[in-house]
Length: 252
Ligand SMILES: Nc1ncnc2c1ncn2[C@@H]1O[C@H](COP(=O)(O)OP(=O)(O)OP(=O)(O)O)[C@@H](O)[C@H]1O
Image (cartoon, rainbow, N blue to C red; front, side):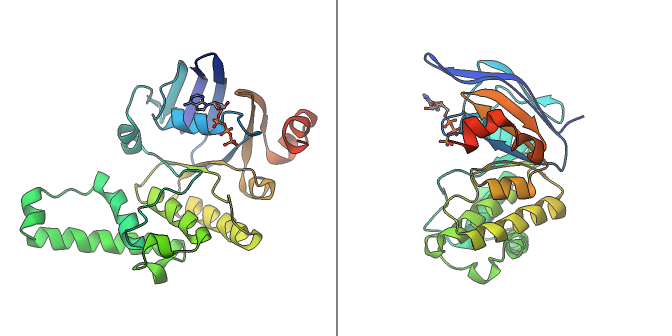
């Protein structure tokens, strides 16, 4: 059974069919790319997968469970986490605290424990700090743990967003243009980090990206959208050499 199984997914905004009859089957552990020209419907697919929008048609199953109709937080608990095209960190919080916010889904202590600073509070805080530091190490951000997120350079802010999404312990991680605004060195390093994250945490990754070097370098399969519909899908070498894809996207 595929980890993510999407069938006949569609949504309309007024008269515009932004996503139409999209099908997607992603195996556990796969690194999958979602590409297409501007306005093709890629971010809308992410918004549908994460419950931000409710589809007009179709089903979205994660490990066989249909998540259509669930709220974004319920979907996060079901195992789908995401990052955004424009960075959405808690800029006035430290790098460490940004990651720790992600644990509040799973680690809970009641108000009294927290208010009275009971021993359980310190124990859980220590555990969360250790777990967050472990994740920051994967992203080479442990040295900046106590910096304010806003003081990190752009490329590192992007990595911190991925670290925070990963801290929710997802089965499926959705990355919306993770390399946007990065220079070639930062992009190359990000590619290694994404591979490492997939291997170390055994998670499945679906990413939207315009950087074709990144897409062909790390994705095992690709789905191309154009005007909200599927234009092509398959391995990068087949898809990126498809004349229709070149005309619609690469040749634009
Ligand atoms: N909330 C909304 N209301 C109305 N139209 C919307 C809404 N969200 C998206 N759209 C429209 O749906 C279409 C698909 O947009 P979407 O942002 O998903 O494209 P995209 O492939 O992610 O583009 P880009 O690469 O530029 O980010 C566009 O025509 C967009 O204007």
